[in-house]
Image (cartoon, rainbow, N blue to C red; front, side, top):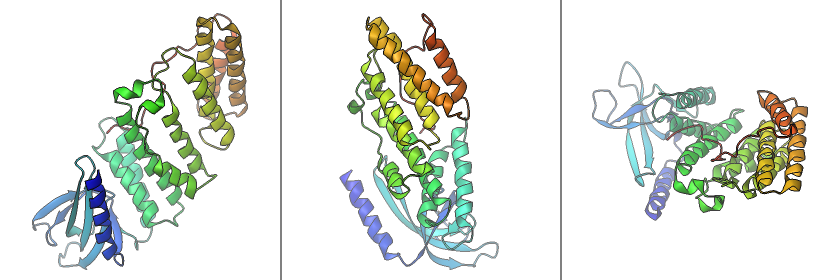
Length: 326
């Protein structure tokens, strides 16, 4: 990793030399050529969302203009950085000076994100969307789309890393500290740059993942802690789009504690968990939430209010699944 860090610093220094040049990105994959023209020697394919520095323009091709660009390609898996200069057709290149460039990038990023969520969608679409959203907020920081783009880029990055983290044996450990946490630096940047906004609320909700146990192992410790975390989130972020989901998750864990305590013959604790579950469910219902959180809360409360009713089983894995696969 030290080698990669050195390479990244070296590339940053090279990029600084071209600081007076215009930046751009690709909204569709393109081939980098040695010289302008599709008959020229091919160098490499450049993915959507890569940072390009425009060095030169030409109309030598009567069919379409071409631009000479400097691009840095980072392969984190192989810890390799490639610095290349070549030509790409202007079609598909969105420069920082282009009118409505932010809207074009956002639209393409949304399309890539939708592809990533579809079974059989385009390979690498999630990474494409992550880069495109990041480029938007980087190039068009004053755009009204910038806060959402920053959040979406960070969330996709989080989901991809989460998918990798949860595939490891350490993800099943009782203590969340036993596994490597997801990198929260991009989430914290959102909460710092856009405090008290919808996007900061969503970032804070994602970061709860690092505090969840891998497995409960039939013990009360994890659902107790997790219920408190979700309840605290709901009260600290009352305007969050995730407040209803947080309250449901808190109530659900109290419902599970009813059974856990009862199995351990801790009847007083079981009764208190039942009361807490009902209170949280009623709080959720009082919000009149959208989607299906209200009926789910009512169902949970009704079944918990009936003595002897079978409660939701203590699930094996308590972390929310990632939206994307690598």
